[in-house]
Image 1 (cartoon, one colour):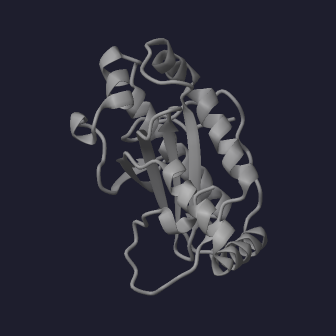
Image 2 (tube, rainbow, N blue to C red):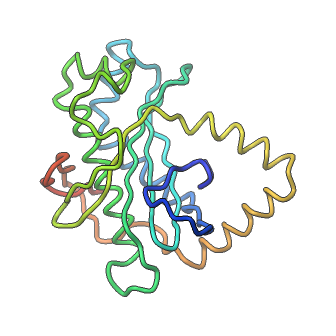
Length: 220
């Protein structure tokens, strides 16, 4: 998984703060939810010869005042990717909303972002997703933009970053830099103390909301 150092925060704080990584089982769950919900879109991209084995890579991190969750639509054999980032405010000392609530909101925000990208699976949109630059889009946020889902605020941003390329650099550091390995171990320990695995109370059958008000959350 890509480390938090590769993620761009929405909050530009001048105070150095450490982040905690998301557990792999949560990341796996989010990826499976996205690939299940957008399965028709992934099949359409492959059927049209626009992508080879398209799928999602999920990354994220938790800071003392913010959570960032990112999902990248990638294709085998190409460095291109389309990534939707979601950011929410977070206060670990607050009783509500909980960490789990805010993570769920990020998932729903990412779903709304990709729902907006895929649209009704028109050929033009599929081509843009596979090969288009961000300038080809008129209705997606290139910078952090606030949106409301079920009266809750989440910030979204879309870019062409590919976390797999970042992961290659992370893997090299993990193998060759003892200090980097120590940092990863510390972050993993902190995450286990902070995080309760897996979103709760998320029944099947829901839909992503749109980029505006949102018609409902993603479910699994």
